[in-house]
Length: 273
Ligand SMILES: [Zn+2]
Ligand SMILES: [Zn+2]
Image 1 (cartoon, rainbow, N blue to C red):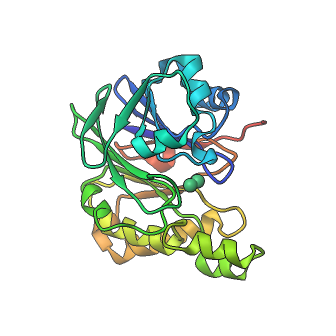
Image 2: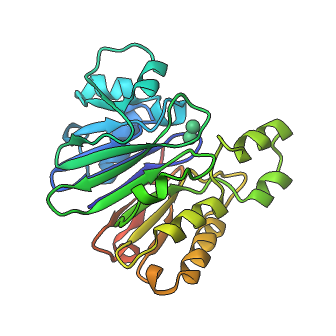
């Protein structure tokens, strides 16, 4: 199983999950042209995508979804709440419900509701039915809800939001109301929140953690990675083989593989967009 990030942050999110011949795009917060460019950088033709799954309807996750589905015939998977919050469009749709299994190519999918100021935000779990490998993705959540940790047991790969360092957000330039929204229960996950979830998920088989949706104002990749490393170090052997990487808004990252060796095989690529 492999995970690549086309880009992640408040100006657009899209993540590629690959297993066998199945290629799932999680979120499509870039227009079709940017999606195609970033997919090609990762060696993936847009025509080869099996389907797109949306975490929620916010523009930085969904702005390109309907146009891309219309152009390439991708089926669109999302919760009823997310679908209802999108504009009407003539694209093939599959409604998913929390706690119920669905399938996309060779992958079994499942969603868990996460607290965020959207209609019905979903964390996603993908399991390869042939190999049992598992990838969990949680973007845009104010805090980690109780059902998430058990759903994310025995992951091979984890993509988790690490939006801000709380002290940097509070001392930074944002208006007070916006700081409150971001740090609130239905806002965005801090480095400390991400680190706590990673520590809970740590086990010998967790090969890669990708930190996503980093704020360019209220965080830095070094700070986010250091927080998570510290949490893994406290877990000792459980996190000894886990690579931690920070995704960027501007550069595709990946692939990060469930077979390990992520630090060597992953590349972060600069695009001239
Ligand atoms: Zn959001
Ligand atoms: Zn977002």
